[in-house]
Amino acid sequence: MRINIKFTFSGILTLPVNYNNLIQAFFYSHISDVKERVRLHDYGYMVGPKKIKLMTFSKIFGKFKMENKNILFNSPINIIFSAYDDELVSEIAYNILTDENLYINGMKLQVMDIKSELFNDDHYTNSRHYMIEMLSPLTVFRSEDKKRIYYDPWSNEFEKLIKSNIETKLKAINGNGMKIMNFHIRPNNIKNKHDEKIVYFKDTFIKCFNGLFTIEADPSIMKLIYYAGIGSKNSEGFGCIKILGV
Image 1: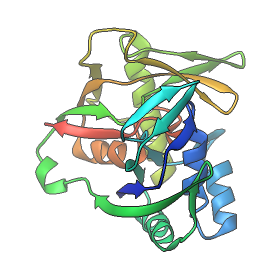
Image 2: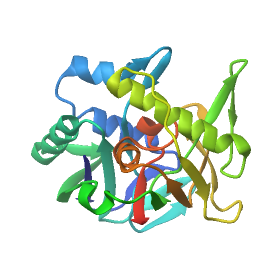
Image 3: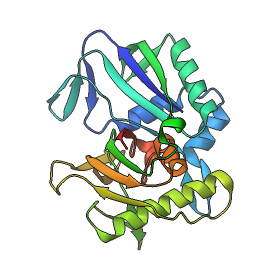
Image 4: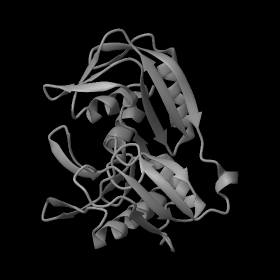
């Protein structure tokens, strides 16, 4: 399940360019059970040494301007939060709606609208090809000698790593190792610097990519991607998608 939240506020919402950690903290703070909040933040679902969170969120949408390495947003703004666990999304939505003291970076917010967005099972039953747009940038990497090697969408390793990540997510859900067949992803955009981004999450730099992609996959796999995100670092605000068509 996912929710699309529209916030209003008085004045200008000033955020650092790298604001993902602030938005992540905002959503985590609206999980009622403190122990569950800590578990999800620190561990999520463990698959060997890997920590899988099965949630993601979009970048902030709204009118803005850049000033001194900050982003200045005008009211209103929209943010999408998405997770594989429907109960988690419902809880966060309820707590945001009933919270009279909503703040992001010191700015008090009011909820103008909140809508649920569902994967249309009936519409996509016979679909295997999907065009998607990144609502937050996509990143994949391989760890070698305590270093991260990031891969761009035009590299040979990109699809392999995306596929492996999906298989890990499936194992987190059902506990069984499962190889997915007939999965493909390719960028629709010509390789360009405009889509490539360097985002800092706290003190860690992350190379990531915006743009349009075509995915070939079974609807069940696409549903997982839709709710849990695609690629790595989903719970830090990466890999949230919009399905443009089939």
